[in-house]
Image (cartoon, rainbow over all chains, first blue to last red; front, side, top):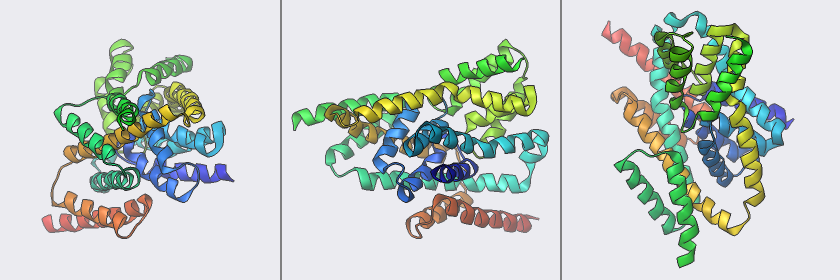
Length: 174
Length: 180
C-alpha cells in the first residue's frame, strides 16, 4: 500500500514541480507533514546528501525520500514515478517542438509558474527557519553564510563544509 | 550510436554531474555536439529551453530529449536510466551509511551545521529564481497571491499551483483582450 501512495505522490511531484532541482523541495516538505516517511530534520539531511552526490538534485532527493519511506524498492518507485510525467511530455513535445514554445497558453502557464515557484521555495525557507532555529548560534551562522554568498557564488559543498565544521567546533567553546 | 553506447555515455554524464542540473549543458555539448557530432548546437539549445519549460527535473528532461532524438522511446528510457544510475546507487549507499552513524554526537553536531547550510542553499536558489524572472506587475501579483495562499490559507503546494495558475492564465487572457 505504501508503494502505491509513494508512486502517486512522486508522480504528482514530477508533474507539478517546475524550475530546476530545488523545485521539488516544497512538495517533499509538504510530504514530511502528512506522512511519517521522514521528519523535517531528516529532509534537510536528504537535501544535503542530494546536493553533494553527483546527479540531478531533484532526482537524488526523490531516491532518498523513497529509501526513507520503503527501502530500495521505495527509492526505485519514487525515482521512476517522479520522471514518468516528463517522460510522457518529452515524447509528445518532441513531435510538436515549434508549436509548443510559441503557444499562448503554454507561455502564460510558464510565466505564472515562475513567481509561484519563488513563493513555494521562500515558504520552505520560512518553515525551516521556524522549526530549526532555536539558538542564536544558528542564526549567526546563517547570516555569515548568506553574507559570504553575497560576495561570491560558491559550490553547495563549500557551505556544507564551513557549516558542518562550525557545528563541530562551536560546542567545544560552550 | 548503439543503445549500449548511449547508456554508457549517460552513465558517465550522471557520474560527473556535480553542482545542480544546469552543469549538464556544457557536458552534453562536449559529448554529443563536439565529440560525436550527432546532435547540432541548435537542437541542444532548443532541448535545453524546452526542458526548462517542462515540469520535472531539467537534467532528466534534456537527457530524454536527446535519447528520444537518437533512438526513439527506448532511447529516452535508456538515457534516463543511464543518467540516474550512479546517483541512484550513491544515494542508497550514502543514506545507509548516514542512517547508521547519525546518532554519534560529532555527526549530530556536524548535521546541525549542515541544516543551516541547506537553509542557505534554499534561500540562494530562491534569490536566483527571483533575479532571473521578469519582474513586472504580473510577477508581483502572482508571487504575493501564492505566498498568501501558503501562509494564510495553508494550501498545499499542488493546491497553490492549481489555483494560482488559473488566476494567472485568466489575467493573461484578459490583458491580451485589452491589448487588442
